[in-house]
Amino acid sequence: MSYDRSARIKEEAWVQFGLPGHEHEYVFRLKSEKNVPFEIADKVMNELGIDWRVLKRGGRLEMSSKKKYGERDDQKIKNAVQKAAFEKYDLHFDF
Image: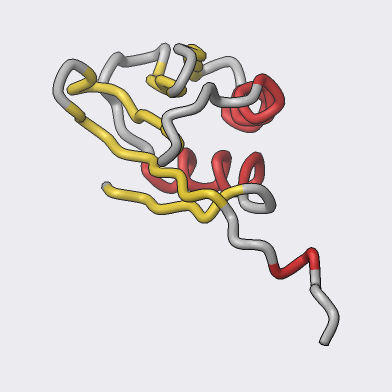
């Protein structure tokens, strides 16, 4: 029986909106609480475009609209995070 490297278990990651202290932001975080890789932050920022603020805060990404702080666009966030991180993480969306 051979080992298939592509069948490795992915690390879990969550995207949530309105966490305590982040009531008007989306937050991406890893289950391991490790730092979010710069490549993921950069890809999310590029996917969201100039109308969104993406701040890398070590173990999390904070995402919010620049146009109207607290404005929600769940589908836009979900699409951006999936494009940036689906290959590396088992993504969960809680919004």
